[in-house]
Image (cartoon, rainbow, N blue to C red; front, side):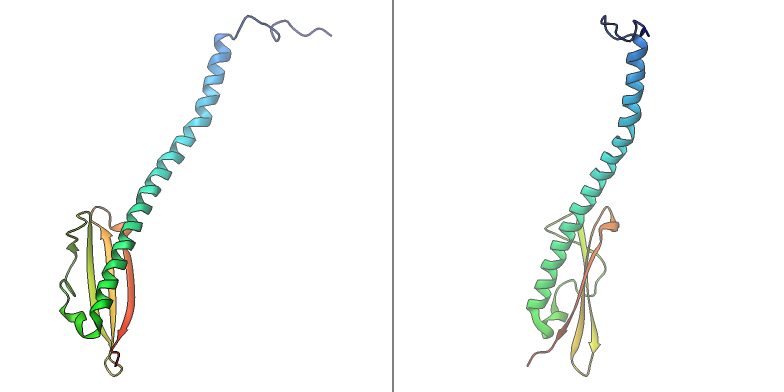
Length: 132
């Protein structure tokens, strides 16, 4: 049984072999480019959410430091969305409502979102009570 000589040709690759290999390479790599773009957008969105979360934590700590009586005197409380002066790409909203008047408990909600993409919005909520 003799194997044809074109299988063991040592002169190099033919044009058809190079074209077939290129088509296979493109067919494998094309879907991977979609994965890279999806990963890059997810990375950007996660970074925005992390910044928004850290800003929300800072706002929450500022409000908690004011105490029960000082909550209503904070600037920007119960106002519409306001641009953050330190981080121009983000805006926040702080809402304080009376949760239980008998127990003297207020509900504090801090929301922070990117200005260009509200999809990365972060919301933190807690209860603040009068402490004797």
